[in-house]
Length: 79
Image 1 (cartoon, helix red, strand yellow):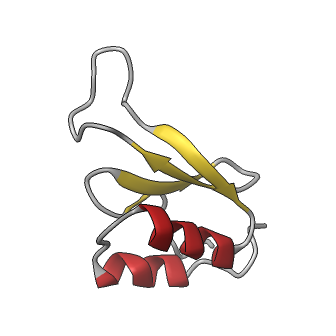
Image 2 (image 1 turned 180 degrees about the horizontal axis):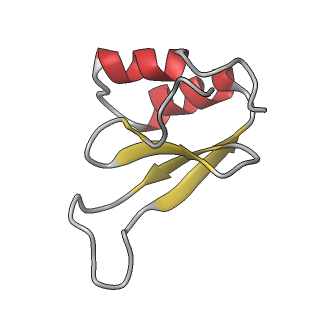
């Protein structure tokens, strides 16, 4: 995972980041941040790349091919 730069911004409203234990798929309602917070909310948590990719396909709508390639470069399991 050292060669993959996180967070990975999938589109204006979705990103993937890590917290040391897992990958986190996050969503925000508006592309503009609010005064109180960045607006990002965790939607799902993953230790396996396959489950992360499944949720991205299910939730995130259109994601550019090069961003999907970045996710494919993640290791099979979070370590």
